[in-house]
Length: 426
Ligand SMILES: *Cc1c(COP(=O)(O)O)cnc(C)c1O
Image (cartoon, rainbow, N blue to C red; front, side, top):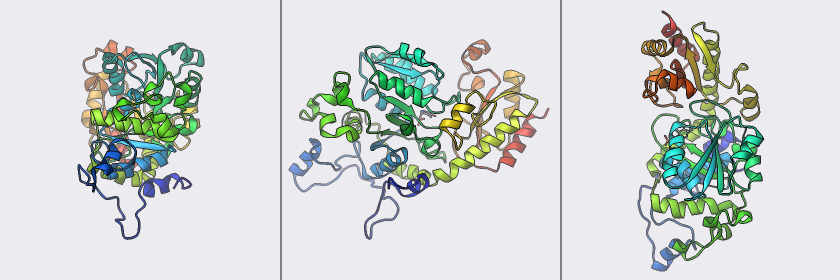
């Protein structure tokens, strides 16, 4: 299906039923698979044949959905994980072990920041954070001899910064390491990072891909472009024999296109078991089938809400890369020509108290710790996710007390704006 356009892939890629087979992807609700001989099964355990033996490692339903995501992102292989957190952890840990180091944009999802800065640090993996707006010189200065990967988000949650993917990819490649991009907010409908040089793409499918707030999930997609063998000493996990699989070498046996995902499945999924359930993979696929229809509506609503708020005298500032006044407008024109997503953030004059009273008055837009689903919602970090911080600490972290993050859903923009308008009245 690789010649088809994005919308067609959203609907039909990944699963092509044969004559008389189910039209919709079957949910293979089975933990295990039956074989006629032990030899048959032995070949699977040795990675000598491909097939299924235990759903913790692989399941056909998950693989249909992963294959669709690989086609959508322009990659060669993909896998689903139980959450976006698991996807980012696996994507990094698959190539960076104790004693390694990564370079990461500082403007990333809070959960990922914690994963990298706290939990992976305990595993002996160091990080150097760089600004998403770092210059080439600043990026170069962040690398060390033991650097194994560069990480960033296309549009960061919640800061809404837009990453210069081409620059980050070029510098990563000059240092012989891959660029991993979390593409959760734009989805492959609005940006395909591999086309700009990214090597590995990750997703929290929990957000727009599911799109209906039903299923937590993640995905990892490999571009198949990074040449592990050309950097043999840096990635021994891929370029030297794996004794836990009778000495196979992933990069030799599975080539550029398959080595990363095969190793990630065979080792990390085997040992950590953060597998997506086939039932949830099915829901995620339902989301994917309409993703290309929903994303333009999220963007349209985000744009209209951002424009309305910009003109409102009770609003201090609005962050949305579709606004010509936004710091990231130019970069968004390049990477996100059809718009980014439906998440808008804005600062209400009057700080914490004003934000609190505004949110209390909202009728349609609900207060939730969530973004990117069909129903609009909002959050004031100062009184929720970041409530342990003082106003001064919030200011230093770039999250003023009056900041509200709003995720514009699929309702009519007029109704969303009317709700905001009444909530902003005295
Ligand atoms: C939500 C989110 C994650 C974490 O995903 P979960 O599915 O909640 O584990 C990672 N990255 C980004 C950009 C996110 O928005």
